[in-house]
Length: 355
Image (tube, rainbow, N blue to C red; front, side, top):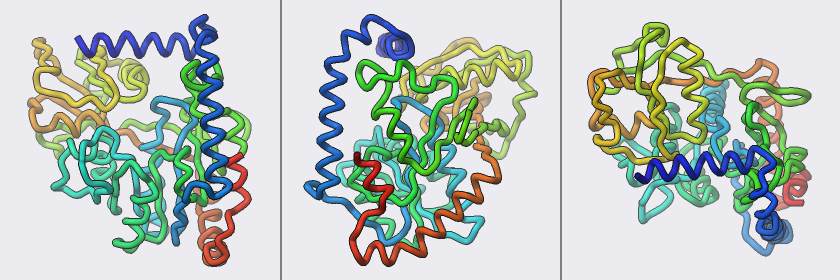
């Protein structure tokens, strides 16, 4: 029953946010209040009323200005791998959303329980080779990484609006199909911040269709891994023409279902809320069909997985030009950072993002 209510509510929100619904107009007064609050918060950080943590290493923030999934986590994984390949020692921080730990931040390890840190933190730990720290306060997570582990750059999964953390490079990620909806702020629309915020980020990466100075990002599906035996791999093509139960509890479930359909798989959509914690009964479909799910869902289902359950790995692909620009800018910040940290002065970019 809860899933049915959530699905109805989610679709209702999308119909409001991604159209010119009359309900969106009725919610505009609350959006104006939200805008005022965010402005006051930015001013508080800009004029030093609220404290800001200045890390002694470069900080890269990957975030978005809309609610919902845009592809941040695959990009964070891609960046971490790129940095390692180019001689950097990265660390990754994330919110730990959905975790119920009483003590934050937490260094994610093989012994860390899913219930403590949430699904995204556990997925990141499985995908990258560098240290991963989770916690609701990104500044505290970065501080732990810097003080306890020999990292020389930090990548933050989400946190574009977490102004308590000074950042050197900002990357905004956009869903190319949904874009900005009706371009209104919460709750009348899907925006956390105005579209003007994109004028102050270093890179705008778009999943799917892009234009102008935007950087295109493609998601390339890799092999399917069996949940009981990850070494047992299969291709999407091997399921072509077959009916499967497609399980998705992510920010944009439709994109996962669409991917499978485009590969000729007759998927039966099994939709769940983002960050949903599964039990075995949730996936008891009583039809004996194979189950294909996202990696984010798979980390929560391994304990009760069945023989014909598979997870689909997704890889981000970005142009070589972006690699060159990103690494060049990051190296420049590393060289200039000692001076900026010593003087305590914020960069022009940082000041602009708080306007």
